[in-house]
Figure 1 (cartoon, rainbow, N blue to C red):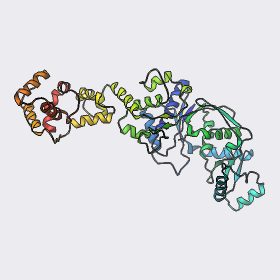
Figure 2 (cartoon, rainbow, N blue to C red):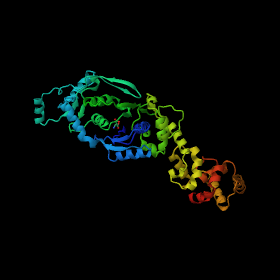
Figure 3 (cartoon, rainbow, N blue to C red):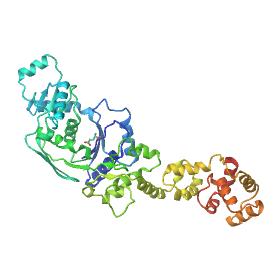
Figure 4 (cartoon, protein in one colour):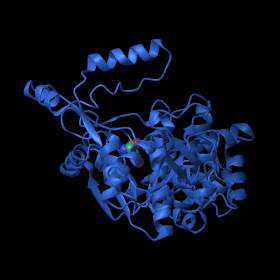
Length: 434
Ligand code: GLU
């Protein structure tokens, strides 16, 4: 089984969506199930409704899953496993208070060495422990650092080897008897028989800790790992919340299609024979072991190009912009000018709203009257010649105001093409929206 384990703590980041997409693809390729695990154990950071938002996004992107679980529902298992580790002397209770830990941290900083737990509570006698407990001293549970190095192979990044010093005696249960991220995650991956963990490389340093937890519990089934390189913004820095394009919600609001965003995120840091494909097609050829190890740079221009290509494949664009099917040819005509659904909608909205201009007002009035008072010719040239003869307008003074009257802008598709398509409703537009 594979899993996608989002935290319901904010808007979905494209890096997370990319992780979800890759998990989905690999689950399909391996014919294994995909579990969605909402990692909601950090109560202070949870934001209500974000879990639902994440599931809605997965649905929108066509990422099918087999089950959804909430990590907090497994609390009793986490506590039970922590107890087992304590009983087996693989973990110990630690009464060091924050002041003491902070002091040690500062000391390490001054001495220019990485902070590690002092080991103070590791060998407390049961009498000493009892004394603390009698005084109701709060405590955390720490896993004893492993005796041997923890080694693992990452499908993308290769071999890793962490020493006990790297791993340290870290906290697995907090003072309130809730599990830390590493503990809950390691236990759940074991409980749900996860075969491969695909996640962002920001979690790489957590992996040896999670393996150490399962080792201590005697779980010997191997879980494979693939850590995806981070996504950088256009300045080459890690894409953060401050970069609008990092938010899936923002991209959708800007009019990027889910199929185009998915296409782009799969392509990012890869090179395939073809650039435009669907998620389903990617299942056929995607190979996670071939993905580039280097961080990938987000390129909005490239996403716009891919989005345009996917827009061209859509049969009924009008449905996406809330227009009647009658206007489908007009929407299609504008495809050359736009790259997103939002831009397309703006173009059509421009046509179907009252138009105000600060130039060519006289010419526009003359043209308006001329068009409304007469029948249309079949042929654009006949129409144009009649307009020129009857109004005396020509060149820039004809074509600029004519286009402005028709589409509300000086730029746009060829008037000839607009005329052919808009004839059935052009008078209505001129009457209603001028
Ligand atoms: N909840 C973690 C996150 O959102 C994911 C951890 C994991 O995949 O192991 O980053």
